[in-house]
Image (cartoon, rainbow, N blue to C red; front, side, top):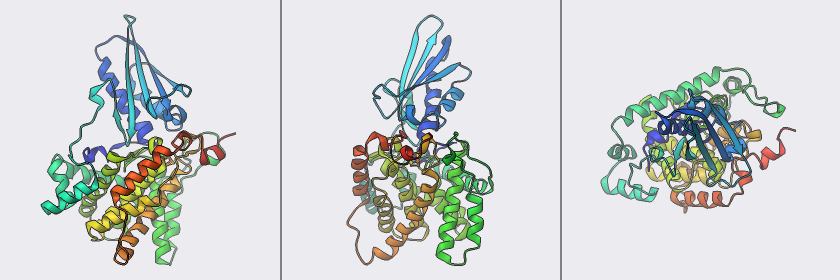
Length: 407
Ligand code: SF4
């Protein structure tokens, strides 16, 4: 498992796998060609990147990152991709030679490469799954935070504090933002930013449960609308699902009296659950469907909420499992490849599901013990994701993307 700083990355939306990762790959490639006389660079996107890269601003991200080199982007939707998120960078040199490197985007902004070792990020946690982490915690009488601090660089605590602050800045700027989210000419995608109006509506609701749900929705929309607009954000675990965890955390901070230090500590908890999914399944919609993005984000948020409410590790695991279990099979079908429909609303539902999972962990667990571990549900998510057809994995060819596509 990798550092929590690789799970909570700072970057611009709308997509960690299609926007942040291509930009990181472009910078790695620039390292491979430095001190060469480069004429031009061509970047070929294959698989999901070819199908939805334009809506996800992947072309803009690589061209910008490759500057000052002149570059162009080719979308190859015909050839079979060796990986669902493949990028091939090819530089033509003045001496007639060519330098080529292939990169794969893995989700959440992580990349790997068969021919550029510098692109491969290192594991720092020698654990494979949640059961082995839990066993270690019990044997050593550690909290999840103490566990993380045994393996992370000491700077991680400051990094997570900065993560919490950036998440909240994103909620607050999203609540104030107005105007259209930039998309194409499909009228279905002409989405006026709605988070602020939803928060205002919440203030008028007398009934406490409904008010909380609409507030959580406003916070999730605030971040998801910002991400869809290409603004600065924190992956949690991805850009597409970046509204779920901040919504739950901001609610606890702004409406429920938790301190920023408590919020920061809850990120250790959310991070370990997110890392477990990343290690054993995937957090990329193009690899595992939306269950891998919104399902994981909801698990992380549910566990963090339980932690903040003082529930045990067992209940945190129950909630994380429960949140994921009922998103199993969720497809990734962004209309015209823009991270708008169904993505923004889905962030709201992910936050509500996280809260519901907390309720189940608190009130149902003492009555009926959960029979499904977090590792079980992650294995089921991987199995399901592997079986999903490509049309339902961020290619904009199935589901809502097919029904609502521009004419
Ligand atoms: S449908 Fe889900 S996984 Fe797909 S782009 Fe939208 S938020 Fe991401």
